[in-house]
Image (cartoon, helix red, strand yellow):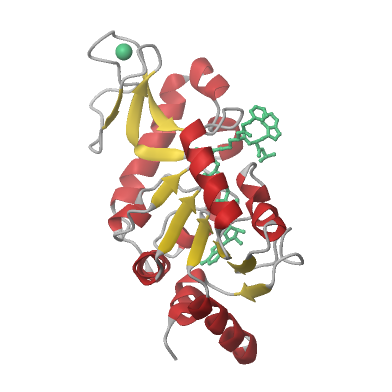
Length: 243
Ligand code: BV8
Ligand code: ZN
């Protein structure tokens, strides 16, 4: 990591006071949560991109639920890592702050973050596919697929699947923050999934400074003001350190 560039980025961080952060699966990887595209991202040779769809759920609700139950059991044993804690510290440092996360694991909230938009939903919440009743169910289900007590229909994970739209309120809050922030920090996302993949361009268009952190180059790497190659669990804490 270039020490001079880190000093410059630290200075930028200290100067700005309308900060927005966008995270992806990479910030949870150091907690042991598999990423979507990493070599550990696959599950029983299935492609997450094919399982995380309403079509897959309609076709085989049991298979999709087995995948989510497996992820819930795995995530339950994971703890927030220094990436999550540094981002919580940013929320305390800055008067205007919003975290937009693509992650459904809930680790940002477990680290203390409260100004969070979970644009892809949360794996601990479930929703009835008929009466839309949403509630948190953070223990394992006896029987899969679980059914709604009120109407008997299947319950689904309350996450946004591929081909489904981001909830309007989440999108509006995200757009407001991206168009009014003076600093956007992007960490741990491969930058393929829309609409999150376009968030950096929106911030750049609104003349915000953009800092990106990833263990490898991403499609936005050439566009941002500072790109740091490395683990978010190491770079984010040093970015917000006083000296
Ligand atoms: C939408 C919830 C309007 C589920 C997720 C054709 C038909 C239908 C839709 C589309 C289409 N073509 C395009 C689309 C749009 C589609 C899309 O973007 N597809 C792409 C992939 C081609 N998007 C949608 O459907 C979205 N809705 O657009 O609505 C619409 C509707 C219909 C038709 C058109 C438009 C909804 C997308 C939401 C999908 N749901 N999650 C669940 O989790 O079970 S997305 C899923 O991928 C996760 O949330 C994950 O976070 C996310 C994105 O991936 P990343 O977070 O970036 O994770 P990834 O593994 O890819 O990368 C990890 C990165 O971390 C890597 O870069 C790695 O280098 C880095 N890293 C690893 N370790 C570290 C690290 N970095 C730093 N430190 C480390 N230690
Ligand atoms: Zn119901």
